[in-house]
Structure formats: C-alpha cells, structure tokens
Length: 157
Image (cartoon, rainbow, N blue to C red; front, side, top):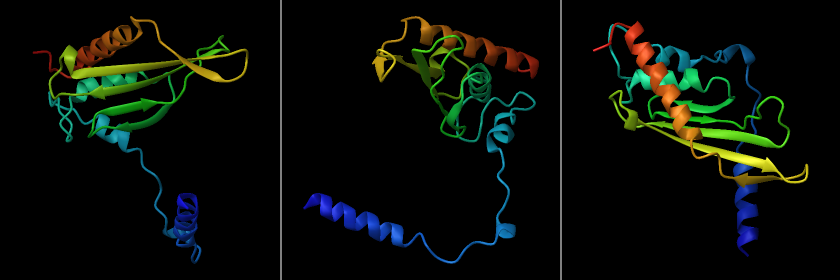
C-alpha cells in the first residue's frame, strides 16, 4: 500500500517536469561563486557574510583542493569532498567533511571528519576507520594555511 502511494506520488511529481523546451539563449552562464566569495577577505576583513572566518574557509579550500569537491557552502562554512583515491592505491579511498564553526581564527573553529573505505577482495567498498591522527594532521595544515593567508593580507595581529 505504501509503495503504491509512493509510486503514484513519484509519477505525479515527474509529470510536472515536462513542458515546452527552453530557449538556450535565455539561460545564464554558470558563475563560480566560491572563488568570488572566498577571496573576499580584503584589508584585514576576516569574516564572510555567513559568519565564518574567511581565512579558515580559504585555508580549508586550499588545503583540500587536491580532492574533488562535492559541495562547498561559504556562508554555512561546510565543505564536502567526493571520494579521493590516492595515486598508487587501488583498494583505499577517502572523503572529508570540513566545518568552519566560528568567526575567529582559532584551532577549535574548524572540525574535520575523515571517512575511509577499503575494497574487499577487489569488489565492494567497506567503511574502515582512518588513522587516528589523519584529521588532526589535515586540521593543522588548514590552520597553518589560514594563518599564512592572514599574514599575507596584513591581518597578522
């Protein structure tokens, strides 16, 4: 009964997706909002509009740039990477969720969750814990980059 109801709702929802085709010339080109906001800390301004520290945000983006980004929300201070498989490894991959939690450049203003999976017998992926120091090491690199950015911007207080 529940499955039937869900199927009817899904079909009804998809029915509204049709319509006349769009004129491609009326569509706007995509913009990279991340770079525009992320580089907005000028003249010692260390806060983004959303209330997170701009140096921590940019430090996290710079530090995690080797991984593919799934999403990045500068106003909310959330960065989610996609799965990254280090070169030379076939049976291990990582994903990171970074959260900028404060307006101040402090070590407790950023939290990282590192997810690791290993492949079982060349088949399916299985969640396995990352090394205990992995999140702390990446956090230290983010903080180091954020302090460097602040110093380069004349904000070294």
